[in-house]
Image (tube, rainbow, N blue to C red):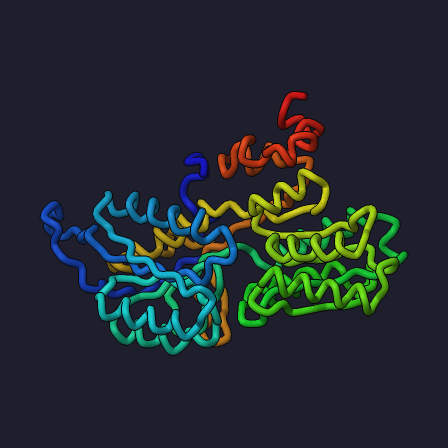
Length: 368
């Protein structure tokens, strides 16, 4: 990922905030001057699953890199992945508490189920940064993308792709998992654009975001609605889009209807290049990771974070959570180069394998 993306600060908060923070077990690292707080902190990082490529490929290494930057190489990241199991993630919080981490960054499997574990951490004097998903419980800070806007970006792109055909049939909506609060926000943003503009024939909340579940749902929707009536598919992410495209091809579509996505996964970008998927939402993970790391280090050291945040967000349990929200970008065939390639997310050779060579030549990514 390009280093020019810099710090994660999108804007400085418009009002002064007094955030009372308590240092959590910092120890002298030998280089700390009198009155200065130690950089030798332990950051617990809990990510939710490994079905989606982004967590292991982008989020983990980016957060590790940013923690090292903000601690002058003295901070330690202790990592665990819950593999989509909320009970396992709660147990991982207990382990982090036992290991006496100074701060936790948690991307919750289940935003409600994690609340008790968040309270345990706070009771142990460990601040918690909710990462990517707005965890419930007494969190200290939150960073993610503007999730309702992500849904709006997807929906607007779908309507643009449909054009005058928007009134000629029905779309299928494939939302994410109900355990993920982001999925609810994506759905809300999408509905705010789609409702009244196009008929929604079938809508699903996809269990665990799994592509195979999206595939089964899509096949069921085609059976219920009739292949000829489906003119487009709102898919909340790229993984599910892959399952949806497979179902559409199995149903015998000569020309695939436009399918949306999110995350700019490599397979999703390749489908976009090939014309099988219409768009994805490219989210620059570097600013999100940098915000999480910067807030986590500050909280661990007892420093203020009001100069880092750009707004406050309310969760179902906590009002006015200091937050950094990052905007997303619509990625289509027209801007593959200026987004994921120019930002260093993927190389041309990674995208343009033999299978996609002709499509890459058509886009000018490769010379004929």
